[in-house]
Length: 105
Figure (cartoon, rainbow, N blue to C red):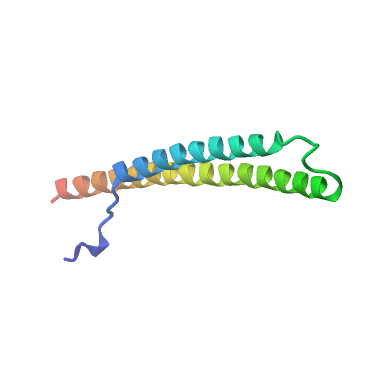
């Protein structure tokens, strides 16, 4: 019998990837917020008229995209955690079913 039909997942790796995604997500959020904060603190005297308006628009887009990236990475980490739990539960259920079936032999 081939092992290709067996349920196989590295649950520790899945949890590790989710945790690493969370950590990198937070690092990126802090870095982007710092950048946006520094760029936002450029004095109005440096930018004027249309250039100032465009600069403000760019900062607002960066801020919105930063928030979107944070949410998406958070969702990815949560999905990995959810899938790890579901796969672990399925694996335990299958192992139990096999043990019960084996006990009937």
